[in-house]
Length: 425
Image (tube, rainbow, N blue to C red):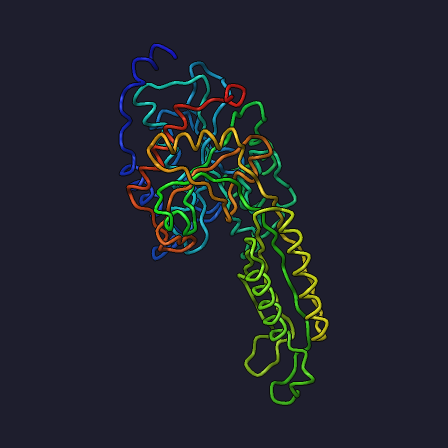
C-alpha cells in the first residue's frame, strides 16, 4: 500500500445513496417525451445524457471521453499511469416508457464510488474504468448490446445498414450524432487491458424482495433465443367463408402462442417464453386475417436446456400450423449463450456482500446484460440490487434509497479489496 493509501484507508466512506438517487432523477429528466422516460440510441436525448454523465465522470476525478459508438468512458488511474483496469459500468439507453433505474443505477453507482475514492485519495495497483454503454436495449435498430460488443471487438458491421422506423440507417444516425461509423473498431479493447468487468444492476425480478435482501450475487446471465414468426393463411370475407373452410392466420397464431405458454408452464426447469409483439393483416373487422407476424423470446438457465426447449417448441408449433393448413416461417433474430459469472470474481462479490453485513445469496439473471458481450474479453461478475415489486421496463420501476446505498457500499468494498485473478487464490 502506498503512503497515501495507508494514510486514508481507515477513513469512513461517505453514504452515497442520496447522491445516486439525485443523479438517477436528473438523468431521468432527459427524455424524448415529458410524460414518460424514453432515451433511445443516437438521439438528441442520448447525447444530452452522455454529456451529463461525462461531466459527472470528470467531477469524480476521471479522465472521460465519448468513444466511437457513443459509449461514455471514464478512467481513474492507479498508482501509476497505464495499469490494466477493473472495468465497472452499465448502459444508459432505455426501452420506451421505461423505468429510470435499469442501467443508470450501475453506471451512476460506479461513478459515485470512484468519486468517493478520489475524495479520500485512494489509488490502487490497477486503474478503474467506468463505461456507460450506449445501446444495450436494442430498441432503435433491433440489435442489442451494441455498445458492449464494440468494446469487446465483436461488433458486426452489417448492422450499420439496419434502419429505424423512420428509415434512418444506423450508419446515418452515427454521422448525425457526430461519430464516424468507419472508426467503430477503435472502441475495441484488448483482453490485456482489463482485469475484470463488474456490473451492478437492479434485479428486474421479485426474488430479492421475496428473500428480504437488498443485494444478491449473480451466478450467471441466462442465454436467450429470439425468433420472428410469420403465419400465412388465406384472407377472406368474414360473413361468407364457413368456419370449417377457413385458414385463419390469427386464430392459428393464437393456438401457437398458447402452445408456447403451455410448454413453458409445464417445463418445470426455469424455461420462460414471451410473445411480446403481434401484428395481423389486413387488419379489418370484417376480413379473416391472412397473415400474422409475432415474436418469440425463450430463455432458460442453461444453453443445453434452452436449445432442447427451442427444438421442442418449434416441432410442436409446426405441427399445429400443418394441421391448420397454415404456412409457418420462423427466423432466429437473436441468440446469446448463457454467461456464467467467473467463480474467482463471484467469490469476491460474495465477500463484499458479507463484509457489509448481508447474507450471501446467489441468483441467476433471466435478463440479458452487457456482461454477455464483455465476457469475450474479460471475466465478468454482477451485483443485483433489490427493486420494489420486481418491476422493470415500466415507469413504476423503483429502488429504495437504502438499497441504492447498500449496493454502493458493496461495490465500493469490492473495489477496495479487489484482487486480480493471478492473486485471487
